[in-house]
Length: 498
Image 1 (cartoon, one colour):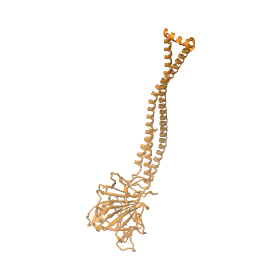
Image 2 (cartoon, one colour):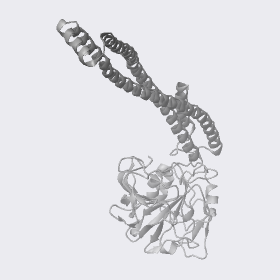
Image 3 (cartoon, helix red, strand yellow):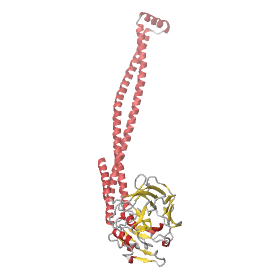
Image 4 (tube, helix red, strand yellow):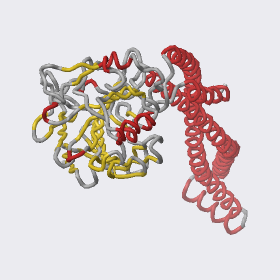
């Protein structure tokens, strides 16, 4: 049975790896997700049944070990008692032996004429005991001594026989105990393997119920493609609409030390969203490892437009689909162009399934090596200065911009659960030398702020289309708090932790 349990645990682990979509890979449509969930639940039921058997086997093995330990202790205790009794019996045996020796010596001496005359004189002259009674007394003493010796010799023989038995039984019992402990250890390993397999299945099931970009548990996981909306971020554009609903927001450097936001929507949408502004060549590189997401923007110069057209991005910009956009009469141009994610998603033809960007931690799991408490971070892009301060009441990092709370329409301050500072080099854009273009390939310094802590590590990305690796100081993946994330792309040296 133990072998069958172990084999089943291995099968469960293999089934988990094969049946579950990887948290960092593309997701199937909802039907495939439901099928995978059903298969995982069936595997979990099998593993749970095997776990019950494994726990019963472990309990039996542990009980056998306890019983054997008790038996061994009793044998060892009995051995000590027997050895002690043997010593006491040998000591007691000396008393009748000495008596018999003394009487024999007396009788021997009585056989000597001189000794016999002396004894006779003592008996006749002083003790008043006649020779017959004296001899009878001597004989009774000898008989007592002989009987005692016989009894003690018999007891000693029995004790020595039991000692020999114990000297054989104890090693046999020790061998039995070692075998029992080995069996219990094997049963415990099987039990632990099944527990681990079930835990992994549970994690996979939870992953099927988590939003791809946020890791938040949802009733139904959306499998629609990622929608990227370029959002204006200068003074006249604020307060924006839809930023709080974005799964991920990427803040990139543009000309004159200003920033522009690339808001990624997948689990939720925003109707309306904006104000929407133009694209930059940085976008093509920053979004290259998302496959073919939908890309909404207000326009671009010829160079940027050509770069977007040559990229896998699904262009749903204003130039192509002006009917999906509208002007807010309450705002001044060019900060008044808005759209609705519902309409933009309707133009998703050719878009690829969503891919995840981060790994998310389980309850109690560390974020990464070297995590320490942090109050926040301050970042300068030049003309734009932003800050994030830890707010435990909201389990988020409250954002400020240029010294004021960064709020959206309605007055709520932006406070994502995670802030990722990816220090980035820029070069002049080939489309416009005045516009910086982010270099996303290679590696660089990384700060990840999550759950009131910061982890300092490195980001690595072999090519613009390769997944970004977010690594701690041990080279292991950093795991974010499930929730929304802002990714900041400042130049090196332009941020301070606090």
